[in-house]
Length: 314
Image (cartoon, rainbow, N blue to C red; front, side):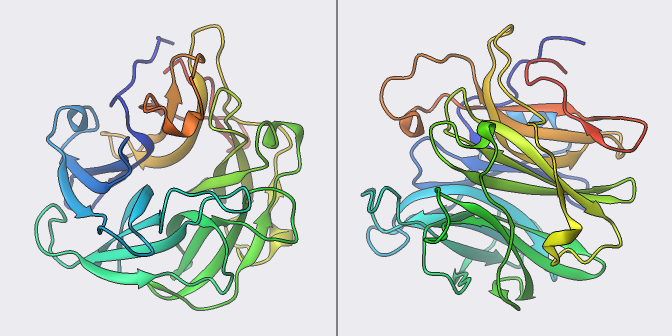
């Protein structure tokens, strides 16, 4: 194994998607939290040098005019969608920001051109802090997966899933899948967030991130049988230990908020995540821009379970 350098610096919450057109598409939180940008390239490595195109800017005021977080690009029902979270201000109320989740749509074959249409808020039926939405198709049905605060549950956010009626509307009530409960999930903050889905080896996996966004940030894993009802919480097994965490030996800290993509060979599952390269953060780590995008191949054990390794080694 070799020491792994960042692919793209100062891009947190990275999401890489390989489309049927053969291009890779990249988006992430930018340090200013004021816009959504996209890049595309023929290879993962080329994403690092491709020019970013700004496809959405926050308005001057209103409910989604501040702190654009964790955009993800998906192709659902013949159109491109970016799902993101945004807030009406940078104020913290009741120990939380005020984010809600939104979607924009583009029907052009190339999402870096064409017009983006604002589709509105994605209403989960729970009026509380929420963020980090992703979508996935399982057995021909589209699902929405995200993080949200429940006033009755201690902590900042839990993981929820729901079916979708359209790519911008839920088609059923939220189902709680996971909440912070283990020691490694409650360091600094009680958090389950940043879910991402991978389907492989007869299983469906949900990775997620937990704890504060400093060196305590780490990734966990849920999994279910590929034939299971993904809306049944009992179908899911939650691992008790993190699958990816800080590597003090090589100085890569707080890996998390990942996505999955496929390698240039069309087969290898690639893990996309952000991490820091130092711990001496002044003030709230949220405002520190030095979370960098990393990409590395996953490995597998004999039972078909993913091996994440360490964040510092490919």
